[in-house]
Structures are given as C-alpha cells and as structure tokens.
Image (tube, rainbow, N blue to C red; front, side):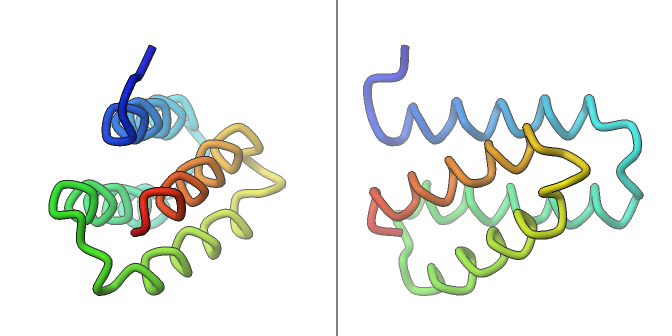
Length: 90
C-alpha cells in the first residue's frame, strides 16, 4: 500500500500503463499522446514542478473527455491522477 504522495502517484501511473497496454483498440496517435502525457506527469512529480501545472491538468482533462466512453477504466485512472496532482500542489 502506497504511503507517500509520490508512491501513490507512481502506483497510479503504473495502473495507467497497464490500462494503456490492455487497450488494444487505441490508435498509434492516442498511445503516443498518452505516453507523452505520462512522461510529463513523471517529470513534474519528480521535480515537484508546478510551473506548467495548469497546462498538464488541461491535457489530463482533454484525455478524460476523449476516452470517457471508450475506456472508462482508463478515464477513472486519469481522473485519480488529476486529483492527486491537485493534492500535491502540482
């Protein structure tokens, strides 16, 4: 069980990676965008960087809107990541 904010975020990102891997119907473009988003999240969390936090949160919201119907579990994980970033002040 994760004990810190960073550990919880790492667990959420791992869950998102599993969801993306299991989502066979994602296009190459969608996969690339999600991979890029994950990398941005990891970079921001590692640096505790809130300089571009609003842009990152907006990208998360856009992905949530895009995948809401076709990938509900992935959408749930993205929402949890968004909430957790807010709690971390990022």
